[in-house]
Length: 357
Ligand SMILES: [Fe+2]
Ligand SMILES: [Fe+2]
Image 1: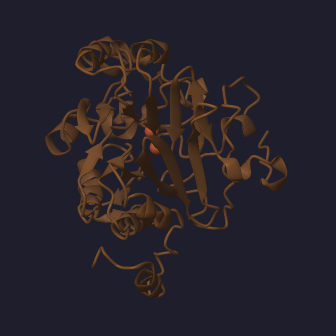
Image 2: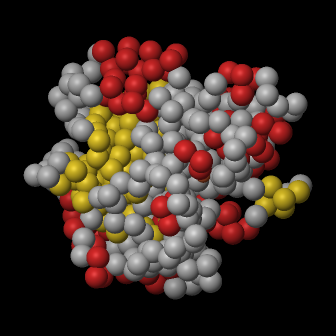
């Protein structure tokens, strides 16, 4: 299938494909922006949660989410420079789930930068991941931006190595959302030391984009929307003038600003989570600046899921391709120095969240 179709050709083709919705609106804008200067775009796909039922049978809805994201990225014209996969490719870290997920990901026509999620890690502690996707943490430079990929889903040694009778049991415990037997995510000292070293060679004027799976701040501990040593990581990033953290894991549109660091989360291709604030009466740190995505309609199979693409043009523009829901654009506001969804600022035009108490 050609990846250089026009919007008109795409829409014609899409009419024959039930999996493909209309070309996400943001792509047209990206095309225009990319014609000038040293700008670039990359796509973000996350939380596919490929789930084996048994043998060659997998949960079809999750397969379809990942396939749809891959298809739509392939139709971006011009193509993004690369795709970030934000973690949780597998549901229970099984080889079969990785192989099935990789089979779908290999249809992408641009390189993939892999970020590991907890569902990918806690069965074999990253063994398969390192064989196939590469190191758990690394950095690279792209068109004047320094990218750092972190494994933010580690936890303490006792929980990891001594608590559980089998790797399968450990994986199941970490895979549950609201589990008092879980353990908070951490980057941990060894990796923080690596990060400090890696950044020694980077000037503090260089834009920095950090890719992690969990948010590198603290939202809601009972669901592990949380990184326990977030403050230590933020302190390492603090000297840099232009820092953005992009993450998955929360399966929702979410953004925040802490000091000079902007944080931006993307949806899953598998399923949406509700916002913890709508679900729990416990204190949480839902960022006040986030305009929440509309509550997903459970009767629409794909509502609340999707993918994103990020336009770098000195500042950053985030395009959220929310399937069966309103697409969102969040811009880094250069005057206010934080991300903002200008279109949905007025609460009157938002869909109010449903409370689940
Ligand atoms: Fe996930
Ligand atoms: Fe996750």
